[in-house]
Image (spheres, each protein chain N blue to C red):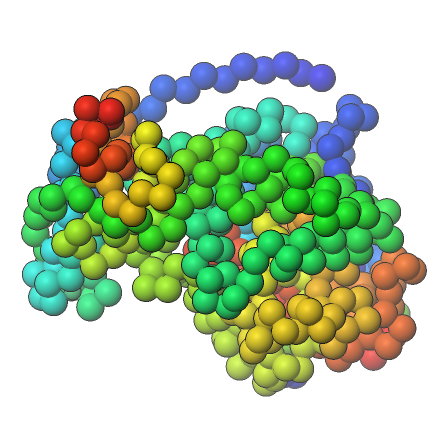
Length: 126
Length: 392
Ligand SMILES: [Zn+2]
């Protein structure tokens, strides 16, 4: 047996995703709207299903509807659709009451671009 | 590929399990390769190219594994390439090998899949790394696990198909039950429904027993052009169709998040090459990373039009219309990632040829078998169709 410890510190560069990443840090849902067909994606899709490469960044309210939720030893996650987006997103839920049907994007509590959703009326819980 | 010249002359694997005997991935790769090579009746010098499937350097702490294994397997001088597509790494390595032989660029190739998924890192570290199998910068940063993501996709599918816990239990019981007759299997078990229902909840509705394990092991194939096959192996199964496809990496970007659309496309492409329809498939090894994924896969592959009814009627049981995962699948046999797709093709070939484990061998092997693998949440799909060469 050869015990070996490896510790790595990455510096990741989000490139075109920078507005999305910065938005998450500030608790803001920054989405991509296709310049050709108007489809809004969040998380942003770089090249729209219509084939267009051109788009602009738009801020959504951060409110999201919960479509499916899974809880257990791995944590609390959901497939949600942010209001104003045509696509869905997978988020970590923070202190979300059982049976909740919607939530509000919460600022990441680490220095990471984390998609986290908290209760609508409990913004301070994040 | 209807008149395919690509013969599976050798097909083998090591046991899939958690190794505690001090052996490592180089040992398992050699064991599987040598068994496949001897079955193919070939010398090492006959191998023109080596295709290695290994999901991540982080598991083995070995970058450039193809060069290391070429040396370890005694193939120095052969062309070498490492293939990766997440969970589908093994199957895309098979595709690379098939293409090399079919194109005439190689006469015989070795395809070796291997990963130390159980013994080199802790389970928690492996699960963290697997979280980066999805879009690392959107999904991965929240600590989202594979189990949670699969659970969300399954919930959408299950609601549409009218499936519930009973279906998950049926798949779990069948795959682990099949594994009881497979001496290479990691988790041969006779589960009761209560035992499954009482196992810890990982990500609702997936409980621990609905999940495939982390395993160590290797699998190997020798693919030979018909013009160069030893006489004794000319009637071995042939690869008549391969197909691959991708889907949006982000689950939320898919219009139907419960559907394995990439699998459907990959299957359509493979069927066109083989000149057959999904209904012609007589047995299949399906990528059952989770119990529900097997049912999502069956639908996407077109092997059923009503998965709930066919599951209930026993269509996928060992004596059913289309036996599924006779090996036990990932859930029963185990999942050393890079070895999985290679092992699935090896299992199909051995079953078609009548050379599988006696307790699982079909007495009348069908004409066609299907090996199905995917990476991510069916983000990269890869399937292979084999035709009985008449040896059985
Ligand atoms: Zn568009």
